[in-house]
Image 1 (tube, rainbow, N blue to C red):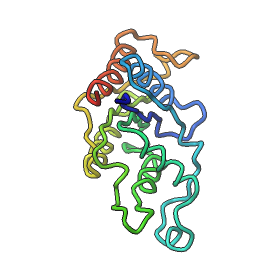
Image 2 (tube, helix red, strand yellow):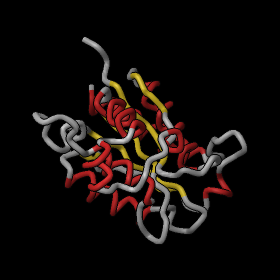
Image 3 (tube, rainbow, N blue to C red):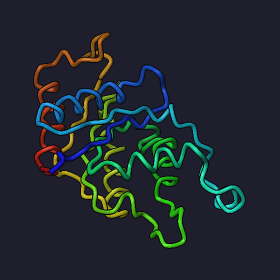
Image 4 (cartoon, rainbow, N blue to C red):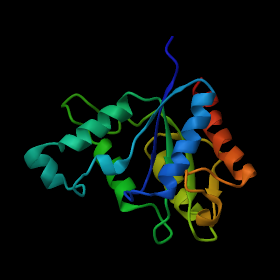
Length: 189
């Protein structure tokens, strides 16, 4: 039996995204618990805004197909979501919208998402740590039949607690993020 596989990423396109670094820490926690983790960056899959007309005339864009294939190959998700204006990023929502599309006549919408389990976390320079985006992300994921772990981690004032190597200098926060990744691995095991 092959071990479960987890796809991990941050919901930001920014090259030095705090949330991408946070996803990497959680991914390390999952790997330590014995699962395979693929860490990707959404910026490596540039996508047009979802538009039914674009899909109808040209099909699913190449990067959307690549991203969808990655989702299909994994059992779980680690998503570190930045908070933009109290919600998830347009890049994260757009990626999920493209991945959710059926690309074959006999394929059901959401087929590569349904039944997965996700761990969600966030980081922000603000005092809420991105926690408001997690409320929105949890609702979105649960509505598309993804089970979301009850625990989540938010890191407020991340610029004060993340070092240049992308590690959290607060030992309790670092442990919480690693533990969340391990908890997802356990849930999938």
